[in-house]
Every structure is written in structure tokens, then in C-alpha cells.
Length: 257
Image: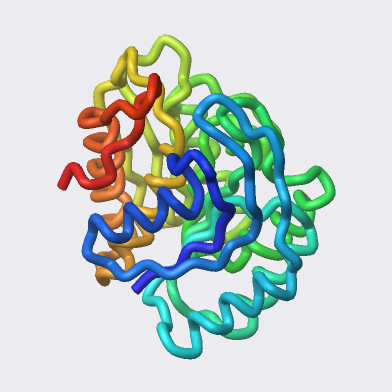
């Protein structure tokens, strides 16, 4: 079993919806704690309604009471109050793998983590994480430096590990002029360079959510962290390659397996 603590995407491509589809495709029972309701589609996020922090915590308590997960991931948390509720819960009661997808800004540019939440996110949540999975912009924000090359990704992964004490998977899919989608994993001992051909002409929504959910699913199946990350890379690469069309948009194929 696996738990996702994240927002709802009314377009079905990211957030809770993407996570639960990914868990199901791996044969993992998925549970969820909803943090926000969003009005969005592949083109834009038009509205966000955060849940009360207390109901976020109560959802997690309900899941752990009867369906204790073997791995957990967080996605969109949005506010400092929700971050505190989530971090407080896991600090007190969780000794299982925790994958933090630092959802900060949507593909369309909407802010999904308030400025006022950043400090508590860094200090309160990242220190509890087993793995954090920033994309290029998120890693630049966490490290305070623009990242323009694979060597920069390597530096950022080590910097994040050094500063926050968690393994890092820095995703370089947005590197300019790159023919490969290159990610760097570092956990203090092992470094992995994960590469797949960059698929041009396919613009999908929810890749970060799906990638981190796949890693969480493999961790729930008791794969070691490095192997779960490697399998997660293959999963998201194939979900893109074998993407489908919904309306006029490309959508990830969570069930390519």
C-alpha cells in the first residue's frame, strides 16, 4: 500500500489522480490525503481551494489506522499551515519511506507553494524525507543557483543532500538543447546518472507527479531506493513514449505496463 498527500487535478493529469493511477498500474493499493482542490486542465490552473490543515491530518490518521502504507509521497501542499500539519504528522508517527515532490509552480506558471510556506517546507519537511525529487527550476530554488548542465545537476544533488540530509533526484528534463532527459540521483554514497531520449513533440502534464509516484510505488513493493529510482525513470520514460491523446492534449499512459 502507498499513500499520496497531494492536491486534486480536475483535468486528471497530475496530483492525486495521477498518483493513484500510477499506484494501481504497479499493483499497489493507493490511499490519499487531499490537500487542495484545484480547477485546472492541461493548459492552466484557474483556481485553488486549500483544505483545512486539520482535515488533512485526519485523512492521514484514518489511513494509518486501518491501511498503514509501506511508502508515502507528498505533492502539492500549498500553504505553511498544511506543510506544518503534514510534517508534524510524519515527525511523530512515520518511519517509512517518504518521497517529497517539491511542487512549487505548475507547468502553466501558477504558484502551487506559497512564498510564506517555503521556509517551513525546507526546515520542517525536507529533513524528514527519504528522497526529494525537484525539477530544474525547483532544484535551482532549493540551492540558490541556476542549473544549466549535467554537472550542475550533480552539484545540486550533492548540495541538497548536504543541506537537508535526504537523498535527491534532480531532474534535468528541462535542460535546453539536450538530446537526452538526464536525471542525477545522490544519496550520500551512491550516485546514478539516469538517461532516456528526449521525446520531442509530446507535451505532457503531470510528469513530476507520476515519476515520484512510481518511485513511491516501487518503494512500497520493497525495492531499495536506488533501484526504485531507476525503475521509476523507466516507468515515466515509457509513460511519455506511449502517451495517449485526450481532447487536443497528450496525456501520460500510466498503464503502459
